[in-house]
Amino acid sequence: MTIKTLRVTGFPDGESVTAVFSVDDNKPAVSEWLKAHPTLQIDRMLARTGSSDVYALKGDMILKMMRVRHWSEHLKYYIGRYRALEEVNSNQQMAAAGLKVPKILAHGKALTPSHFSGISSYYLMQHVGSEYQEAADVWLTLETHARDQFYQQLIADVKKLADQQCIYSDLRLANVMTNSNGDLIWIDTRIKHYARRKTFLAKLKHVIGSFKQNSEGLLTDKEIQQFDEILLNFVES
Image 1: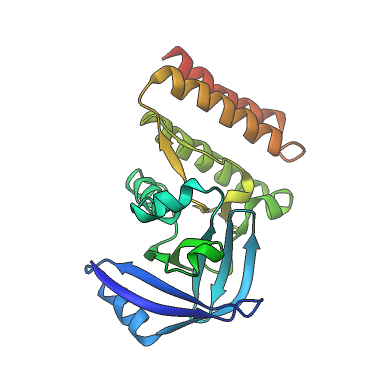
Image 2 (image 1 turned 180 degrees about the vertical axis):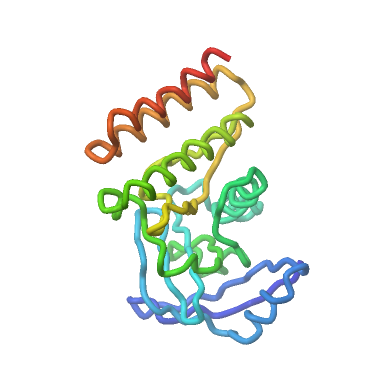
């Protein structure tokens, strides 16, 4: 593992951040890219929530920066359990299970005082391509064949995770991207494994219920039924 210290500039508020990236030595192309870009320059903001900011960088990369949500994250930060690493690990687990996810190139945590200004950790990933958009934004305009392909892949992916008693914690159409062909890429990668089956089934029921509620007005009755069948199959198995 190689450590790279870089500057991130160009934030809307004029802030700059010192970033320490951990780079896999088996990814020489990543090291070369970072070497050629000693300063990462923000091109534009893509999304902002209460817990993270997502930026497009000059050089066709995406930077996701996590913000401190609770005082306990300061403690986790110093023992290496920062939130970006949790998403990186989930990304790798999802890829191993056969799900399509963006390639994460490097990850790290912000040095103080940037950390105490609210930025705790971050990761750098490849842009999935301009042809992909959030499924929630284009769902009603997709051609029937593309929508069917996307939805069947979504169901298959949820089943793959559930077979391992893993659950994608924030299952929403806004957290998956698609193109005009209905190809699917998972973003905001966060999964959790539940060792106890009773706990797993309760969480699966909750996540599927939330997904249906968040997708109200977008899904057909048949599509809703297909998700209900996932839960029924696991309860009866």
